[in-house]
Length: 321
Image (cartoon, rainbow, N blue to C red):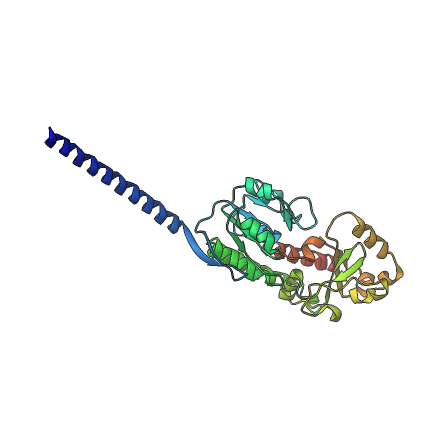
């Protein structure tokens, strides 16, 4: 009897040891799988991160990140609205943004909506606060995709690398370069013209410097900026008085507001009827071109760049007819 009891005790110990070994192996396997699914990454702000190797639920918290993802053939599960807009950027077709959930205003998204979207990666480019970064990082890894005043091409390339879409990036940039050549050829007679880029605000107009996104696209075409505006540094001038409207002039004046209605629109309408504005060379030559100010006078991505090319070619081609 004692011998039987001893045998049963030994069998029990063996079973317990086997179970513990199995649990340990499962835990190690899960840890190994988790480690394999993650990778180290250094973002545009120089932050060292651990992010998913193949993220499935990405949130884009700037119009540039949304633009870049769509250009690469990837849809985020959610994104912020366009700058000064209730909804996604106006230049994007509804078919492009269908199925994407809005998480609210650019720069002030709804944390509740972000939580409900269950992201495994958050893209955040441009302006942000440390406080916002800390809150978002508690939800999912946050990658700063571009810094303020950085060329849109650099940010686009960074997102492509992040999402393992180098081939899609190369294809798009080849199309962009081809489109640049087409526009140059079509607008050969205007290649030395100057292009003024204006945003009208409720308190008056300001012009954009070379730093702004659309100016870089203009430069790719080969067009020039007026002397007052041909500077680097800040993205735009201070708001100008009506006595300084001559600084808005150029062979072509592309002008808009961030919003499609409101004080800025009515102020612009009043000012453009004044003798001082009508005396501008670009206005007298019929080269005043209304544009989407949220696209032309702010940050932009690859799809926005293509839209700027379309706007320029359309405006200058129609003037030649």
